[in-house]
Image (tube, rainbow, N blue to C red; front, top):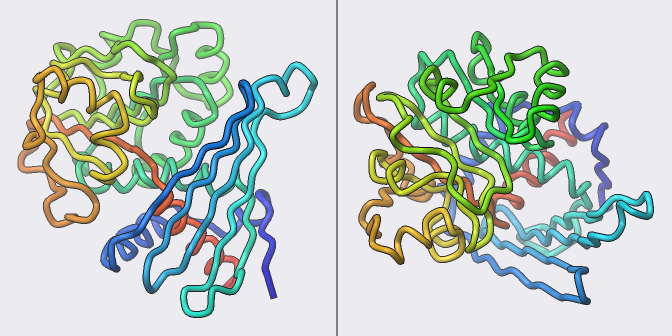
Length: 302
């Protein structure tokens, strides 16, 4: 029988650190086969992201993106994740799209920080006052329960409201905020770099989430050159996302500068307290699959 897992009920049974454990276990299995399909009608998009991991199953994450919906009072994005059994191909579960996306995105960054950030990190700076920024506050609070959070956002009024909602510090000046941060986690829609490498302090961990298209960047060349650079997946970041694609094309960095991904987990480690680490969160359908399987397992053991 197929299980249907809605957002609120499904989320009640989840744990951020357990999800990172599930990610680590998933990357010890056979490497995922992944594929994306896009269909377009003017500004409207149908996106399908698929993954198959032998031993874990298959997943298809489908979303319709209709930019004109908000003007009609309708959400812009609708979707679901279909999770299939690895042995029989049977439909195990249909999961809420937003539930899987929330936990996949923030959990991906959390595993990166678990491997690369200093364990004694206490000052965490969030860049971006959107939904992902709120999710990152929740996720990072699980790994660093004693941390002090601050928030910077390009539009001050939006940032101040979110900071007030979360009970964290509003940071009006980015350079000053970066100077005090042990971890910087960035989830903006920027196409032009605004994180200056010259502003990074020794020992900082930089978690890059926002850029997802070839024309998008959040950090400048100096940030990449000063840091030891890691990604969640070579296959879904290097040739696809401007954060790496643009500086690779210009020669600002080389392919050898991107040191490891989650499929080489043993190499994802900090070498000293003073080094700067940079993690590019690219997402990917294989992580949707791992997240969906974790959610279903948690649902079945509730």
